[in-house]
Image (cartoon, rainbow, N blue to C red; front, side, top):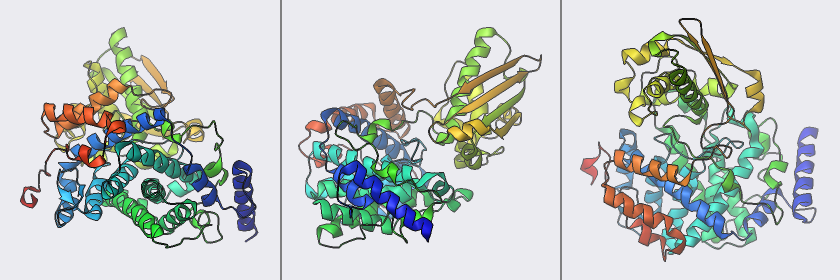
Amino acid sequence: MSGQIYLNRAAKASANASAGTGPSASVLETLATRLAAPVDDATLSRATRHVLDWLASAQLGMVQSSAEGFVTLAAESEPGRCRTVAGKSADWWHALQVNAALGNIMEMDDLHRTSILHPGPVIVPAAIAIAEKVGASGAELLDAIVRGYEATIRIGRALGTSHYKYFHNTSSCGSFGAAAAAASLLKLDHAKTVSALANAGSRTGGLWQMRHEACETKSLHNAMAAQTGVQSALLAANGVRGPTQLLEGPQGLFAATTDHADPQAVVAQMGRGDGWLIHDVSFKPWPACRHAHPVIDAALALAKTMATRSVGQAADIRAIEVATYKSAIDFCNKPDPTTEAEAKFSLQHSVAITLLRGLAGELPQLIDFAVSNLADPNVVALRERVSVGEDAGLTSAFPNHYAARLKVTMSNGDVLNHLQEDAWGDPELPLSQEGLQAKFFMLFDAAGVERAVTQALLAATLALPMSTTVSDWTALWPNVVSQNSAQHT
């Protein structure tokens, strides 16, 4: 009990020091004050990139078989003011149910490193649902998204890796971001915003057990986080109050779900000159778990070295050693993947396909993770030569850096090494605007959308800051259905 009292005092002291508030201010009350700060034009522009990224990921997710159950449920809605990624009219609840479930299916959703979560798949669709419900403008949508990212990231980084061991951070922290975005669009005052955040967090969750079995629960986590946040904001608007000390209280989120909460991480960097945390979010270039991206980048670098030095081809590789941080091994040590999801969470498969592609002067492709390619003899042969082990130094650097060390030994005894200290798409190695747009076209092309439709939607998304209403933009979403859901159109 004494430790919890200390935690409560530390949280209050941190909040008071950062915000200059009175002794009774809770961490959520201080966070709500931060969320009321004005958002600059450059940050609104940044938010359009995350909307672009979510929309492309969700569009291709829409035509996957794993989307079918969500699409079927959304089809039960009567026509409403909101739209699904399938281009269908629905009420806000059903639209959010499907839109928030689709952004993570392809494993190409954005990522914030230190909070170890993917903000876009939860916050963007939550903000869109309320924006359409209230008739908000494009600028108001982007403004709300920035605030949603802020809340999610701040709480996520405070929970630490012991929370991540059992909880799907995107879900457990995403509900706060959904609530913050919805509160912004509903123009809630400070007290009601705190209640929206508190009630969203009071019902949050998402356990990692789902990653050990073939199921769609990960997408459901995102949908439920978005719905919980939006519902909490709508109820707060109608006077439903929440516990202001939901984070640091004796039976609050910190006490219940993490061994080493850092309340200061919620309230740090809240000064006038501190920028919005959406600028620290990474974009993913490869269709795999982010923990596999450092080894993909390392494999590309070594393939380029092999080609330049003419040291041999894939058949000449005797051994491949991967050294990385513990969480990457915990999530992605799958030497013999049998499903697309397992392939995307396999360090061994990621290294093998990347070396094969890289030696041919190519980049990893969506199809490389398809079931049809998992038994390719060349892939299997190379995959079997991959060993995986933990590097204590890289584990210490996580989650500030997602890194991997790759060692390739050739049959003639030559050894090649590469240390990838950060993944492509992180702030240190940003994905360019051109690269992001290329990803947008790639995903829409793979979803079977006509290029002219994609080009028009790209232009409209980039113009969101000037859009009169969000509904003008969603009206341009292509009318498509899941490959296995034609009966629901």
